[in-house]
Length: 242
Image 1 (cartoon, rainbow, N blue to C red):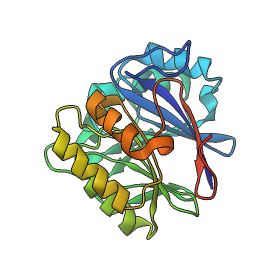
Image 2: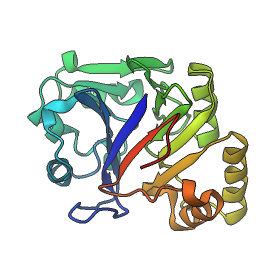
Image 3: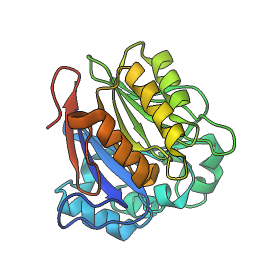
Image 4: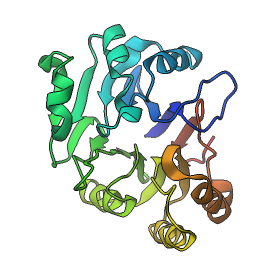
């Protein structure tokens, strides 16, 4: 399976004409439709970026909210208003909050168990203690692609869960890694871990931080993807990044 992913909301700029803002959202194409992973902080910006990316709202078949922070769930109301058919997946820790403004019939409550939401596409289930978070795992047939909102539980724990869900190597990691307050030696240890895991491509953005992004770029070289608002990531287990 080839992963066709567009970053729709990010504080890092990438493509001209896309608005930026603190937060994260991306669209993963799957056949005609696809999955909207997180909704950024600002519904208006998200909708304008959707239009800029030429993604019609009715192509969104699933919406996944990684965690309760508003920079990842702030655009949910606007998305739900323009698309009344998409199934919405939220963690049990925020289910009651979301249920206050959306019909419960549209919402799937995700607990700590993994869940397959499309063929070859899984949710990790809620991970972590203080901040519970869901990540997206996609099986390309030649390795797993991991998409994170902020990786609050830690990317090591997320990758460990990915291995348990689908016993395969990690091909790529995309999204926020919450390393903006980490020291150089901590980031270096994480890079070593990811290299040992055999991660081929990495596209860190949002809360990853400038220092970590620079270190990832140096360590991964041509396999580092400069992700930001408007980035189109086309990647798969048996092909190179385009």
